[in-house]
Length: 149
Image 1 (cartoon, helix red, strand yellow):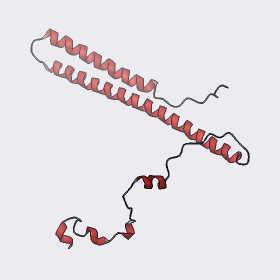
Image 2 (tube, one colour; image 1 turned 45 degrees about the horizontal axis):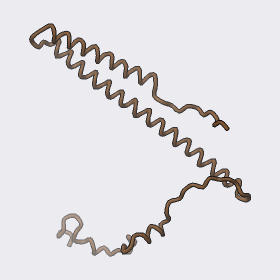
Image 3 (spheres, rainbow, N blue to C red; image 1 turned 180 degrees about the vertical axis):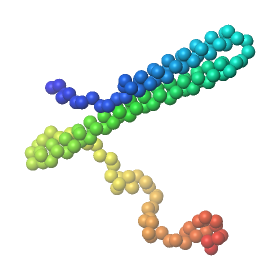
Image 4 (cartoon, helix red, strand yellow; image 1 turned 120 degrees about the vertical axis):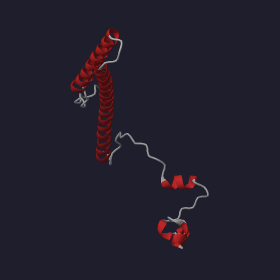
């Protein structure tokens, strides 16, 4: 049976891509302008400094915007997967509650090892509740050593 169509999650697209492309075009323009100025003259001029500054700045802006777009896209995919997982979990819980009397086909979710199992694996370590510890153990060690004695 085919999976029902679900609405597509938000993914950064046209607007983010527009700004990345725009920054790339400006960076290419500045780099070409800088190349033309360097090939024409022998000494450094103010126009070359301006072209170099623009080229570096717009290149960095294009890289940062591109990285931001990729991170947003990855985050939106993870968010969509998380929403799908939550719906599947709630549906299984609903189906389990409805089939409590009968033998329903509910997919069991894996459970982590219990605290008792974990505690038995920690041989030799005794846990003492915080309120049972004596305050005298820390007197000399708290902030400044001898000041507290």
